[in-house]
Length: 114
Image (cartoon, rainbow, N blue to C red; front, side, top):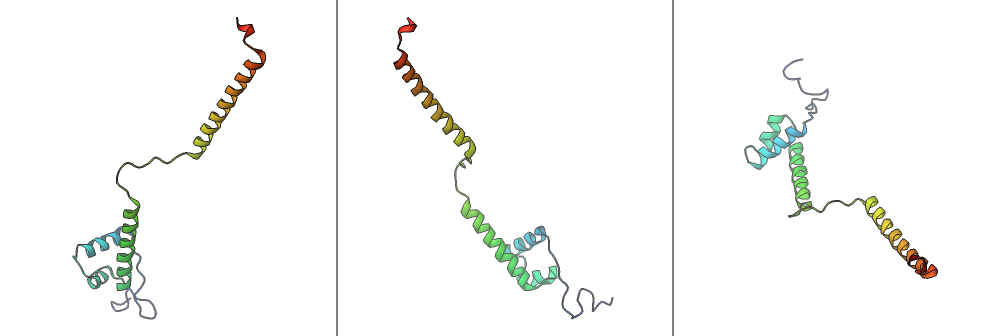
């Protein structure tokens, strides 16, 4: 392979380059810190300028979404719905048992107890 054809496909286009998430984050940080321009980053990482622009857009949108979901203060614990249902059922059964005990006492009376 000659120096001219290395890194290109049959049509002469630049071969696809897949960047890891860490590399994409590094590119984003360099752009935010204004260490490099979009063109310089594209040349350094050997990708198209559109890829660099997309990395910047996705990172910005992801950061804004994460920040909009975060709220100050303590987080409310996520509730276990099954546990809440079991507690409500236990309370309902407890109330029913109390009612039955009162009815039993009224029917049979207190005479046996003393």
